Length: 109
Image 1 (cartoon, helix red, strand yellow):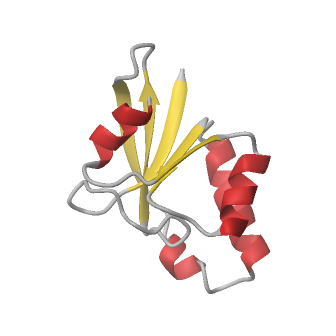
Image 2 (image 1 turned 60 degrees about the horizontal axis):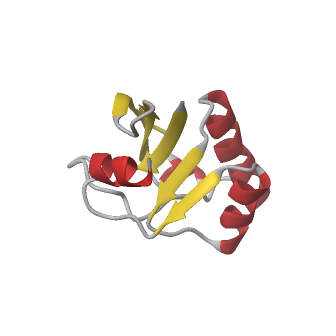
């Protein structure tokens, strides 16, 4: 089973900011790539981003991804440091996604 994390806004669209997203969704996909479960979390990364150094912020995001057993990250874009961190975690990274967040998750699934 794949688990995808994607930044979302209040209208269900892909939030364009990954590392500064106020909210993300974690979707579990079935074997056909369809969403089985969808859970949204108010992570507050937009506020927390500037409270500590970049390393602590990346560690916070890595811990969230590990805690939720994420296998894939989908985002419109992210900085090179964050991209390296995601890749070093051996997660599948899908950049350039936009529009309806649920549809975007099923497209990468």
